[in-house]
Length: 489
Figure 1 (tube, helix red, strand yellow):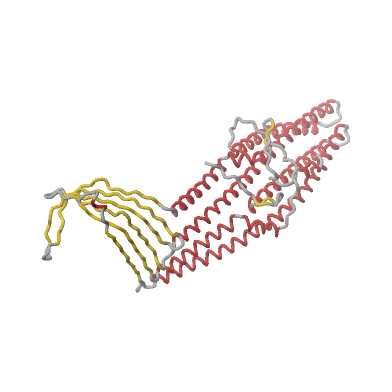
Figure 2: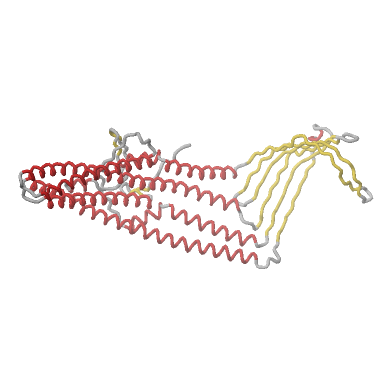
């Protein structure tokens, strides 16, 4: 096997995804694309994003004008109530009445101030079922109300910013989930590929050992080799048979694991093969780190944590201080014995109130809550700094590790070629009786070990590429940030 073949297989895992299915064969890129649209993990990632998206849509809808219709169906009440008399005494009277009410209102929050304004129209009816059977109608054709918290946390504005950050983070998390799926599929794909190569190698070795055993029997029959050499060739042949059977089972299991990860049925045909040529990635650790900090969800996750900590600190500070609520309303209303009369010549109604709350003695409660929130915020910031540094170190050493793997792959590809060539020479020399069988088996073992090492390095290299891509969320071949198509409902 020539070294150019293995160098031909080097490069990035994700250069221009082009799914190709040929007679049951799926390329690595095709498997990744299939998994990112069809696998259980992809569907779970899509549903997780959908939860955040719909939550964000619901929050944004809550900031828009809300039209509400209220109604109390005709109700009935019979009870004894206390009635204040002109002389100041209390008289108890039996009361029996029906009542009903309807109302239509529209309200709008004001995130900039934290207040709420509403506009409504209401109508009520009361019928006294005792004695006079009086009927009363009360109408409020229009009523405008405004409520404004003063020196209190503006929860609307905080929630607006927090929900927006969560939604943006959910989109980035979805992209990273897709890349983690790619890492997982790369691992399963190469496990199946290695199992396939092991099976092919075991089949090749079985055929060779069968030939060697046949030759050994012929040589033994004419007295050219000792019985010990014949027994050794027979033992090698039987071991090769066992290895081939085990390799077939391992390959079947590895293929099934890949099918499960892809979300396809067991009975479907699937065959893997070595990836096509892709260009080598040459990226500096500094550039990779710069791209990672700009696009990885880690930074946004930490910013959201710090934002929440700052919010809790401000809430603790404001909740322990002077606060007030301003309530103001203006409207028109009227009451009459008939429905039509209740809307004639309405009179104005106004109301303004300012409720205040001034903490006087709290026994240190506010200070303790502020100190706790401050300590939590400082802890969050320190943890964020630590996580950022660990992230930088991880990206730095991933790039260095990728370079080292490429160099190792060059060496192992050359070693595989040398071991293959040495085995062919030793085999030919054995066939003409120039070397003993022990030398042949040693050459065969070295050939197998070299091929296994080379394929293992190839797998490690592709996994390192996939992990770097998932960590940085950046395509270093196209030199652009990664994007994913979020599945529709």
